[in-house]
Image (tube, rainbow, N blue to C red; front, side, top):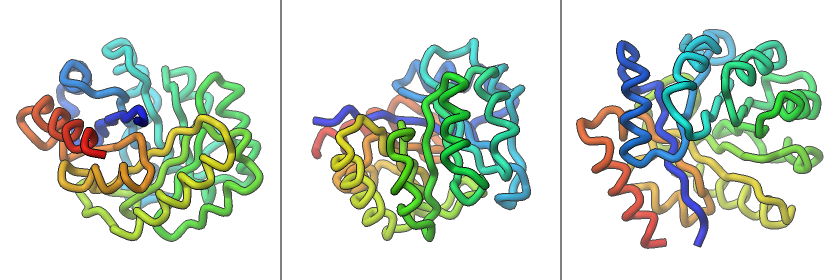
Length: 221
């Protein structure tokens, strides 16, 4: 049975008490803290930067997974690594040199990965699988929280799983966008092992109840 990981996205957390929010969600069963970085350029929204990552780092021991929705990416990668990120992913369209950007992440001591929008082909992986630690499949178009899951993402998750299995490497397969209790099992069946959930967790009064319910669904796979 795969190791499944729940990664709450702080995009939906209460920013007035962010340290408390991340402590509580980890206490209630989160495996990873997902950190959405948007620049109002690559995506039509503006969120948070390295200083916020640095501020929450002392509050949790679990990995911080930084998803860069910025263009260009190389300038900001070392800043997030220094701020305490453990995993850094970016969109291949946002880098002029994908191989170089992946190596930059690894040179700064973090796990590296690529993010694929609903219409972005997986062919970007063809020549860089040796530098990939995580693949993130977007099941919504990036830029805003609270969107509905795009069902066609299941096919892309399955295709990514085939590529991972063929590589023989240990690569995480993450899905982000509209993940809820009622669809997490379908994403797992398609091949995902790491699940980003924002409003489905932080939008509810009892984080533990939601995370436990997600794990119950995953146990049926």
